[in-house]
Length: 213
Image: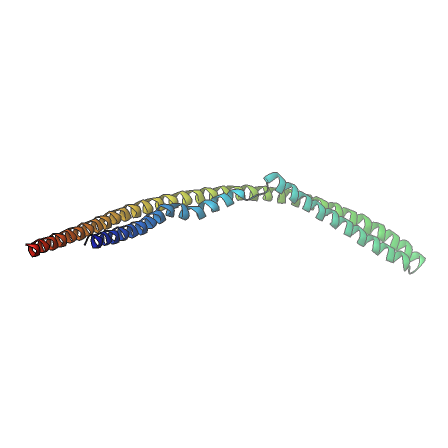
């Protein structure tokens, strides 16, 4: 009978340890839950901070370079077109009189083209200034939007982390109460088993004493 009592006690202890180990894993899972929930939001916030936006000065400089290149190329192409037209007229003359007239016409065309090119250059310069102002306004608006989005994301991350932490604490308290209840129930069962074993021993000892008498 002592061996049976020891076996019953070992069985009760092993069951209690097994229940406690499972509950410990559950509690550990709830404890690490806030960190696992908040990690994606933190990574998103850090990635937003790593975004490299061009400065206002760099954006204005790049826009001016592009507009100036377009203006220069337009003037070059216009001059090449006028030169090619003049060369064709020189290579295919109709008569001496018409050549004189054509020369005068060409000079007039050249002067007119020069005036048109100057007007086009002035117009392009005005367009470049307008575009630069528009780029500055767009850069300021984009910077304000980015700052606003970063602030909004930060607030959302903080709120989500607070909510997750509160829920985890509540779940941890609930799990702790459940663990305590299970532990109390297991302890009560162990005590009942021990009492039952003790009662059986007393009964057997009484029967043996009666048989000997």
